[in-house]
Length: 148
Image 1: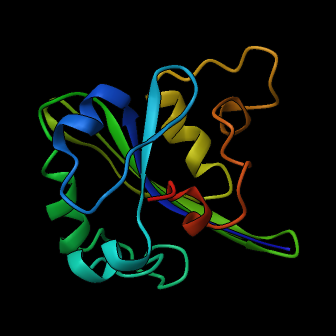
Image 2 (image 1 turned 60 degrees about the horizontal axis):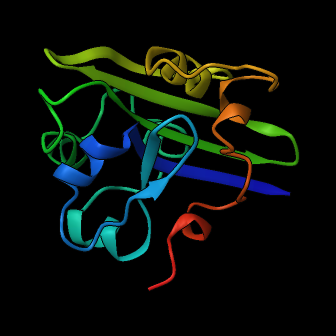
């Protein structure tokens, strides 16, 4: 079974403040939210589909940097992506804080949990940070888009 995720994750209030027209903010646990990067939004912003995991890029592309610039200086947030099929695959992340880029692109089996730790996610009774935010609730980024 496949799993894909491509999103910006951060504090819900911050993402709502900088959210561009056409993008949707989806509430998550612990006061966090995500902006799913999929469909028309990818096309309009010229953000490539999974550039770090699927595309093999080592640097974050300019369209993602431009999208992220809406939130720079407002707090901590992360760009995350994941691609798995049949149990194999990988994850990637880049994090920002009030001063700008906090971490360069990381492609690793635990990249999303690394980003979520940076964002202060508390595991509590869950398996890990990914589980604590409920990121396994949907198998595809498109499924995170709220109904119009």
